[in-house]
Length: 339
Image (tube, rainbow, N blue to C red):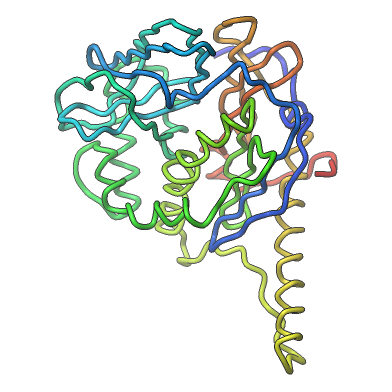
């Protein structure tokens, strides 16, 4: 695969954003990205009618007056007796148009049947499966079955390539991620860390759009990854929490001060990790153009994913760490950048 020479950096992708107060629960940290640069031309697929017309073919009908920006790796896991599907890439469905996505992937190996058209909640694939989509050159609708089986096995589950098995087994833990992390006013994105390591960077075109995609991201995409990371950790611990210094604690005021010090230390560690990413260049390949918005596949040694870009402005980005980085765990400091 041939990519053009690097033409954008993480700083480009995050232009116009500032970091909010970090949220930290257990092994996961979320740094909200805040911005007043919003674009209300685009809505999420929540209001669209979605179904399948064949295995590997998802039909999305947009009856609204605004364009639907389909997030990368949106997945439809339905209660019907039908095979669940996921989409392979970010895309745009113009107002009052219907689009057939013919490169979709089945994510429920042993269930037959087509999804009846309707307004369905969407999930976003777990990080490990998003990596598998990025690495695959196949267009076969069954191409995720083996990665799903491998993902389930890492989390202690057996059986066929049915993603719904994982979601059912860990429903309680996934729901807890939704309860523990909240969107904040002005938020258009987030940098997500697990165990102090960046695992994803997300940016949406507007506050409204972000509210729609946040639950699928924190629950199925990154919540699933946190469960996997805990399962495969060598020492069973991927915690990033700073220890509370107990020396000299005599009352509640001392304890509160110690907690504040520990929180500040965690916050600075996370921000230092993020600063290492800011200057990294991405190779980009434009895959399509819709309504003057270019849809690109982007990657470097650490992160890979997709963006939507109009001129120099990035409207949407969804990036996860690469499998290569996961194997190497190698960090090289880049040019410092205040965030």
